[in-house]
Amino acid sequence: MAKKEKIYDAYFNGIKIGTGTKKELSEMLHVSTHSVTGWVKNGMADSPKKNAVKIAIVNEKAMLEKYPDWVPYGGSKSKNSDEIIDRDRRMHESKEERRLRRNIRAQMAIEALRDERNVLN
Image 1: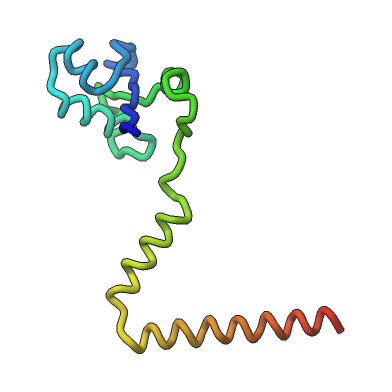
Image 2: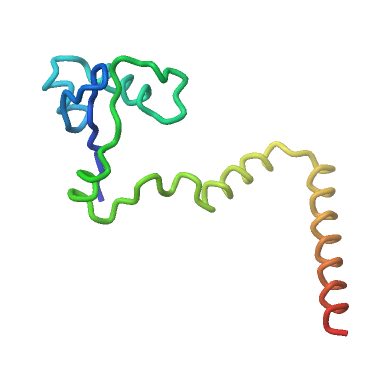
């Protein structure tokens, strides 16, 4: 399946100047795609440039019309990505750190069994 190109609303001083993909916006406004990418970065919610003049924000309504299975803000913090991060972190661990983590997991399992037995009695 091809990658879903996001559709953005571009704003200049709070006035909407266009809607489209990065390439469409760059052709429409006669700027480079790199400029539009910068506007997208400015338009992100956690951007330090909250007073940026030119911004681009994902148009969720247009994305859902074009791609009905698209999930806004979905998937980036999935369990799989957390597992990948853990795997990368463990790759640089020493034997002692792995042993310590195994012992902690074993201790937690023992405590869980004790708690289950206390609840059943």
